[in-house]
Length: 459
Ligand SMILES: Nc1ncnc2c1ncn2[C@@H]1O[C@H](COP(=O)(O)OP(=O)(O)OP(=O)(O)O)[C@@H](O)[C@H]1O
Ligand SMILES: [Mg+2]
Image (cartoon, rainbow, N blue to C red):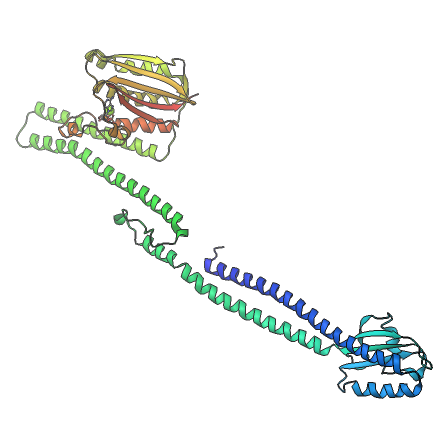
């Protein structure tokens, strides 16, 4: 389920507030509870000491006892918040209501206890002491009790206030949290507005980093990076379309021109035959461009080479060179095969020959008559590299990485001057064949030798 950041932040704020208030509340409750009990105990002690002292010193007879009970009646508050009881074996020296029950509590000499009166259901915190005999009076036990009701009432009021405060605080923090989250997320909204405004025509635009908080920097930089790659791909595609159109225009213009000339006046059968022949050549050129483009499109879609055969690479190189024999003889060019002649690879042999043919064709084209070409086979990191080297004018370094681009030619003037050879797809096909075999390409041009290589996975 998709959750909104605002909701999540508000929930987190609420939980944090709840936790904080609970901790503070529990601590305050404990402190208050302890202080109130201490206060009660002080009260109980003071009364116990005062009354205990009087009993101990001045109640040696029944007469003095009755004076004491009068005094106890007088200091016992009418609301029953403070009570006194005296227990003794002699009924004449007893005081207080519900004495039978008293027997059961406060057994210790100086213990604190809790006592609930059965009739009124009032609970008392009690403190008791034992007082030794004096003349007529036997030993007695004095119990002082303080009503718990005010204490409990205070604690209940405190808890109620705390709960109200807690609910109020959580509500307030949630509202504030929502507001803060909305403000905090505003840069994101701005970002999405900017991103929404991007179209293929505005691909060169980038999202503005300066106006964004640092937290959004990473995502913005990543997004801008993606935009940069998109822009490059888009430009390449546009350039590619222009190249395709340009490439098809020349053969089409030749076809139309030739046909128009042929039709401009009555012609003999032989003349028409010549025109058709030249048209056929142009049409074949068109077909070869279209076929190459289709092949590259399939390779682009990640199609891997099929029909793989394990073979000896040097043997396949030799067979491919044989196809060039007539051309080599004509130019007096020689080709040597060097390197690891025993290397084996698993590959589609037809594709391999096509790639190597393109390299050989380029090498023959770009070297002068009588040159010595070298095909080197090397095995490196599980891949077999096939490099074709030829002597010739060096290629300037900026061109090297672009040689394998479609329709890329170092000397584009050559093409525009009407050269029928080369539409700049040869090396693009080499690259496609290499990638269909999980390999790569490399081009170097140094000390008068140009070397173009591709690799296929070994095996
Ligand atoms: N051996 C080489 N020496 C010097 N330049 C080369 C060599 N091989 C390729 N190039 C340069 O790289 C460019 C691209 O080569 P590529 O084979 O792709 O196209 P092409 O030979 O022009 O046309 P195609 O191969 O499609 O007939 C060539 O136009 C040429 O400028
Ligand atoms: Mg070529």
